[in-house]
Image (cartoon, rainbow, N blue to C red; front, side, top):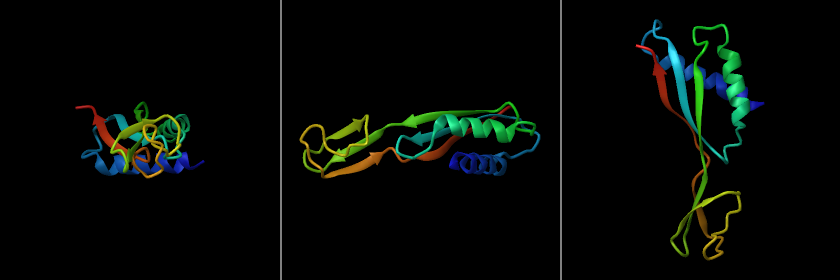
Length: 113
């Protein structure tokens, strides 16, 4: 379950990013691509488990899932895919480039004033 180690690393980044230990963490917002291999429910569960009974208890992990997006080199079309089938739906070319879907990034850390 690599979601636990990812949750721990998110918490390490949060700890290093909060300017003052007296500020209470409200939420962490992240973007996770559909191709990242991360189970979002498992990641949220692990995050809640590791912050329980800590100074971060009660904070939420808000996840935005990023869809798979490709660009076709043949017909110059950008397409959002529902499934990881890397064929241009417009011209059926295999000559495509992945534009989005592998992300894992923290976009916002919200603390109380």
